[in-house]
Amino acid sequence: NIADIRSKDFSTFMGEMGKLYQASAKEIATLNVPTVLVENHMNLINNYLESAKIMESVGNTSEDPLQAYAALNIYSKNSDLETELLLNIQKTMAASGIILDRNI
Image (cartoon, rainbow, N blue to C red; front, side, top):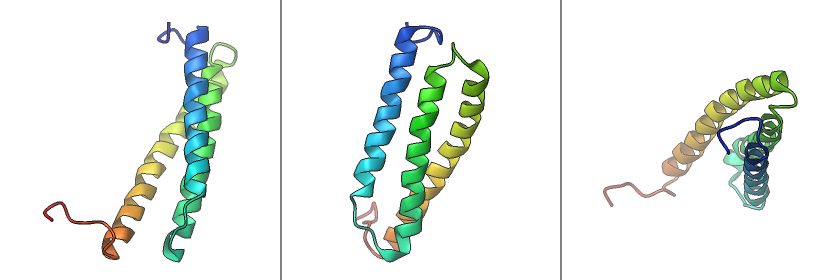
């Protein structure tokens, strides 16, 4: 039962979530980006790598609930930062004419 934080299913699910973050970071790292976006790009990669570790910690809630709680607090901040980083990328690309307007 994935809803039971003490279950093996929950731990496995969180481990798989961590793998998705790792895979995303790895894939993003292969992209060529304009110089103006390099720092933002690296921050997004690091954010995803940290989120992967957080998922592992959350998956171990039954073994170390305090560490999982701390990890969730960091994840909340990472989620906000991810939104900010993606918005920065979108704005920079739109300013460069790379993203088409919805009305086109």
